[in-house]
Length: 498
Image (cartoon, rainbow, N blue to C red):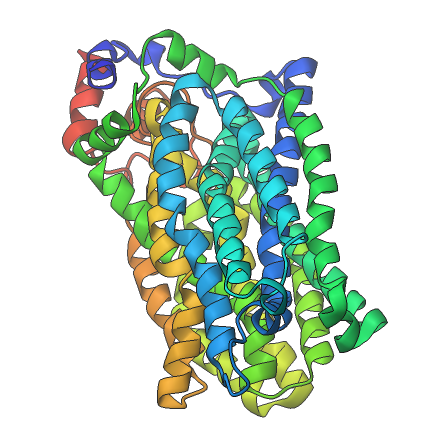
């Protein structure tokens, strides 16, 4: 198996450690390609989350038009609409298992072109769907089918975009470059929120029910065309092309999964645990909150949506400075702070939304939004660094999407169901607190990878001791604090100095 044989080709001297390439080492053409990779990755990510955002903001209309099967349906249409949202996540791991290994084998760029086409077309097709009143049960069936296509494509989109961007970025600026990917995420969500809110204000509830709900879905096709044009003009990273030329590739999805489970099980587990927090926080704060504030707490819909838009705009303003900060002080301090914040502040924040009126709503959502943006500012740079180049796309896509399927897409429907069964409106706070505990435990096991090289077939950061002994300065590390590398990584380090 080529991947496992790659260990035997490890560098033999300290002088042959993968070179750390900072922004000052880049040629003008490399800087241009790095900026283009960020833009191409970010716009695709924005479209993916624009889709999820408009579904979340329009769920009140979707539930009535596609899932109201009787006159006295109660809360069931909304639960079914959220379940359809969750179904798309069930197929995401399948997309990750298929598209991740393909990205490690044939290139990141090719897969990113495929995913943006599939996401854009399937989302636009939702705008053409007949309603339940027109064709009966065929309407929700077609909606579920399109959501599954979206989910399969999304299984390769985010991981591929993060990996592509991180491999193009300068090592000392990967946090800043990576934050633009999440800038695209928030921009997509904010655009969805602004569009849906303004559309509702202009045409009213009756106008939305009459067909204006279709417009946001249809616009995705235009955005997808722009993203496709941008991605067709991108180039593969030197990190990937150098590694693949040495034969360090996987040949199939089963081989990739087997290699990850045998060689990097702890890296997968770390990623899985951390993504529990990222996804629960992301989908509860940015997707479930419009429904929670209006349907559960009885707040005014327009006021609630505008509050969320304001918070998202503040998050957009903060995300790039926070990403740059992680380049200077490291990823771990920010990730630990945010994870601990969710443990300590989630329940009080949700309580404020219930009792504090408009200002309490702003303070509660603002607290959760601030903690979330600290997480988002670092994940696109921190998570690709959990794996070596040969399995980076596979490991990220499979671990990320398995965790997302179990905890991300189900977060809204789980909270809605638990609130309905218990009558406890603080459920989102307790749910976020539990996810925060899991995320904090995972983050504490992360290596510091700010400023480290992603090149070669080593886990970034596993060669810190050798670099420190050579006199290199590393963010968040010193000879006294750097522990010996364990297990497989220790073996690799010994091979380097043999």
